[in-house]
View 1 (spheres, rainbow, N blue to C red):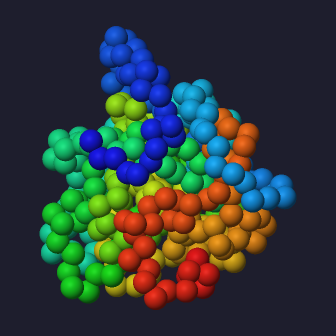
View 2: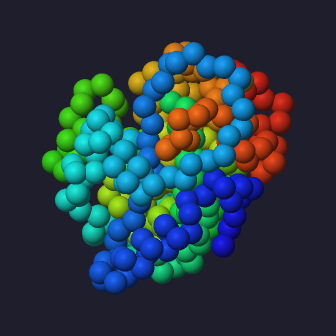
Length: 303
């Protein structure tokens, strides 16, 4: 099992995780789990907080408070609205500047790439965070198989677009479908995960089933859900949020306590289920693994 440098006090308790897994097995259910909780803005005045013990996330918290604008901007409405979303059949096209373009059925991805459990801290731009045991595989493994050409510099991701099943797609305020992007070296970093499950089960719909990105040193909106296309390009791809509000959401979107959002500070955060604030960690605590990617860059300019 892959583990980051997260203290055990910050992880959902093992007995909660295992009891959920045992219940699902006993019920004969394959495709269930918990969701990455999303966050609501909090513009309260922030003082220099102390590091406090974590209150573990509850399954109730993480399955009923979701950030998934394709369904709704109301975080408590996402789970019921996504209940009947169809995730089978599902294909993922990998194309662009690669020597070996392929289209994979989701079942083929699950069989081809061994699933690992990775415990990652995730941080939302609105200053909430949590820790989740994901199931999935390194994006680097998929990219290695399709063989990026020497001209490839970026990876572009595109989400599913089904307005008939995803009512939020009818909103005129966003340039649908949801698009995201990474630099190729970021995508090839071993921390970058294609997630297929949570808590030992397949992803639930409200978490981005059946395939989503998890980039733990970046703000949560970079971790695009419901992926159907991955393309290698030689130019920086546009992204949904940097297109909608470029002064607030930059391409890099690294967790950085020293660069404030225009409407609130990023210097502290509140863990889901905990009222106390704590200092935000540079690169969300993954500085040792990813800081080298940004050597010499002005991280206030390239936010």
